Length: 300
View 1: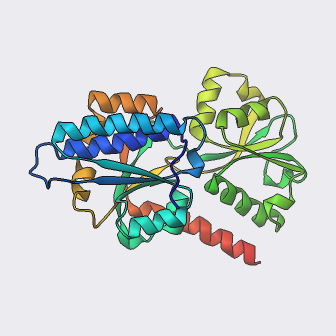
View 2 (view 1 turned 135 degrees about the vertical axis):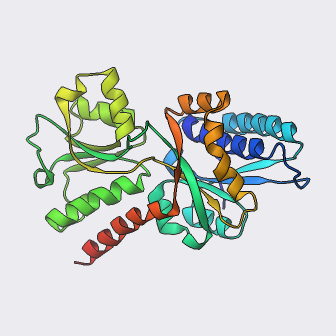
View 3 (view 1 turned 60 degrees about the horizontal axis):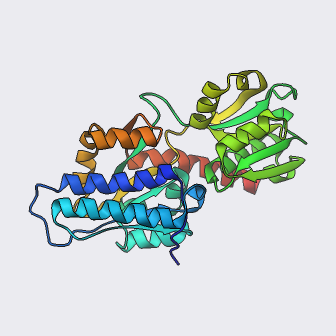
């Protein structure tokens, strides 16, 4: 069943901003009496900072404001604990826009129903890659040096886990869970980097944006931590629209102009992103290739 619960401020703002794009794009059109946009968000990767009560109150106020401005009744957000149930809801039209990690979308959503969408990026040309980090004092210079080390991995980060497992399978021919002396799961990138810095682990996985931000705040990280591998990705979460949704093209056509508005700039600043950028369904192919490679290695 769908579960509404806590999720991070960044993803809440992302959800609310999607609604703003929708309502503003249609403010001057002759629209049906009850055009409802339903945004589905995959919950587990984002369940850390904001209470359920805060989510309900904030979102309700936002929807009322936007709906009143264009004379329509409602927009819904649904949070899912199960990516399979979220996919079923998307296919059946219960939700018409999705926000989830790209690997999860690639693995669980039919391309036949996906239309192009958008994501937030750090800055023009900048990625938010998954980084495999190591302490500089542990004689770790490559994947070949990881046996018996202490690992921290982000909780509910399917891409990080598959990326690491693929690297370990190619080098050691065993799953990563059998290689390390200890494995800790943590939710927050900040906590992961700090634990690595304070020698509570030897290696860790985080996204590039969080690591770069922490290095700006603490330059000593450059002395203690280095990157030994990375998987390129532009954003932690991608948004796609159901191609059968009647307002699909308006959403896609208008998001860039919305990003230049005052409200849009406020959103991007709070979301720690520089701009919104279009993403094509074709971009999911890279995650298909990673999943295919991973499955082939598991069979060897």
